[in-house]
Length: 122
Image (cartoon, rainbow, N blue to C red; front, side, top):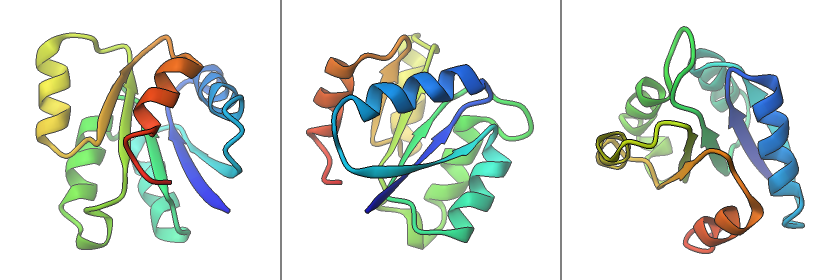
């Protein structure tokens, strides 16, 4: 079973992301983190197959987490999709330039998730 790490400082948003993803009927389990620091701990403690990552979080932002993870060899190929309300073009470019696999602008929906996930192998 695949493990998906949902990283967002809002519990409500983590639940929305999980529920939207669950509606796609992809068998998986979820682990959660409220910030980038917690997310790093989750990565170290288990095998993660996909990260759904918010940008704006306390302690360690999504972008800082992304840069840190992409600098580690064991995670260079792991899919990381930014799921954020940061909709400005320069934010999208910045995230992709730093190794984001893809970028989803909130609010999320099943159609967008399906489209983005069709590009990666889970």
